[in-house]
Length: 125
Image (cartoon, rainbow, N blue to C red; front, side, top):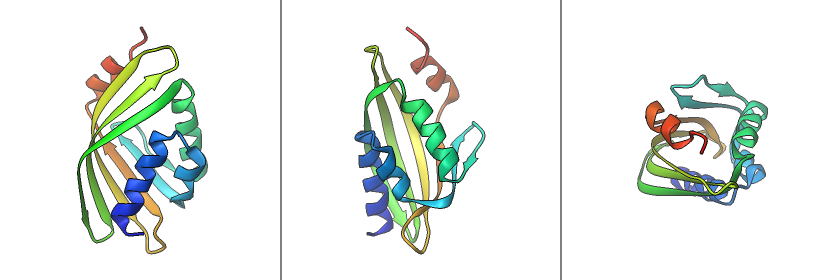
């Protein structure tokens, strides 16, 4: 797969809530950083973070508005939509940066978003 195809597959796995498939596309020492939160390192920490986050989610609908690749770096402009089991819905505008290693796996993933928008969208009903 090309770096862009890797990221597109990763997003498709998010939309399917398939954590195992997401993790399979990541390097063991991935650095996952939701800016402005603290980064996590490694697939075990990333899995724990994703599992905790998806626990209340019924399904995801990440919509990619623009994607660009330059070598092994892929940039995405997205709206990440989460449908919760309790009927709530949250939508966050995100700018994502993915670094792809020489083995084709994601070595770095940084998502940038407005923390106030996140807090408003994810507030309890």
